Length: 227
View 1 (cartoon, rainbow, N blue to C red):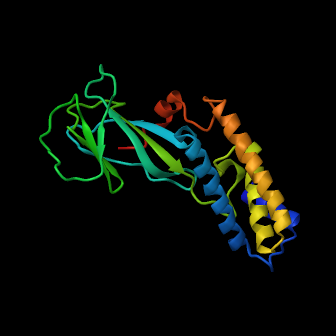
View 2: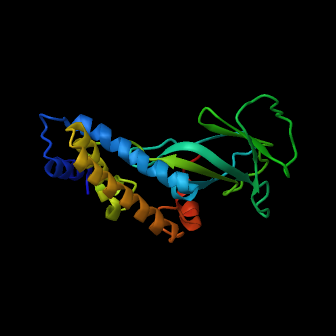
View 3: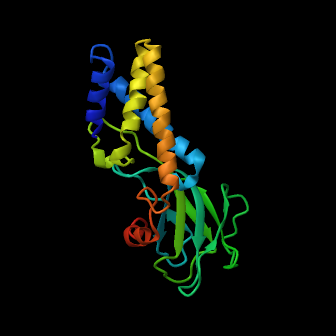
């Protein structure tokens, strides 16, 4: 369902008119529900909210920008892991991650024990690469979905369409609460929890689902994300 369809259905099911509650307020509640769904999934396992990308080196360059989200992509909640390799013949090895520049050594040369700093929208890697390698760095992050808009289409909701009813039941829960119809709110809340349980069960049973980017997709689609 498009977001406009979810809002319209909730208005009908909860008998909530635009005079009682504006689209802006309904959208605000819908985004609370949307983030709650992803927060609950991530609490179960980071695999539900994990994406990765490969990127090429820039010779003798320490800083690599983290891709900025677009209107159709997700925002980055936190960087989970960074792996690099200093020769095309090597396997990737993990970087030790720091969140401060204290003690940075620009002359650090141990390629067997690299480290990085994640700061200000960039990843700073030490030592810097000395050759160009197409898949030099692998960055794995945990994402949060960008806010929905009333114009957001079904394809840009970061849930498969079969799970959009979880957003509808959550929104119904909020609308019934605003009208102090607490018995109906309880029913909507039960529906919401049942959808959450179903989604966790089905996603957990399907490790190759569309909700987690495959290694092939990462390599083929993400090389252009960084300079």
